[in-house]
Image (spheres, rainbow, N blue to C red):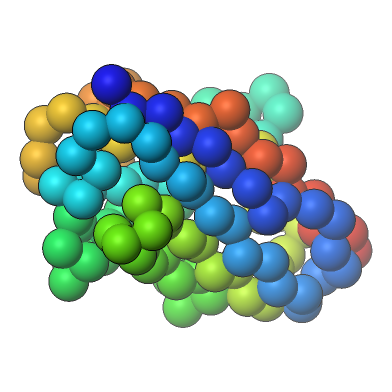
Length: 124
């Protein structure tokens, strides 16, 4: 079992920055890939970013590429999402997630463990 807790959300003006954190507890955090997803009201949950367990491979949704950076510190069992140049359309609840199987995936249905989410609101 892996438990995930997100933090760092808030209200920021357009162009601002936030850093989200995802603290993991349980077994073998360091061998799992980590994903960040988001869900806006009345929209489906969508992929934002993914990082391999070793931290040497990343992937981003086109909508955030160049603005968001995913990272992790396995010594702290924590993954991060640095979000710069935020836009109103980035407003959503952001979730971190991981899955038992290794390997990349942008499909939220393939993830087994989820945090409770943290709200990010970007004002125009």
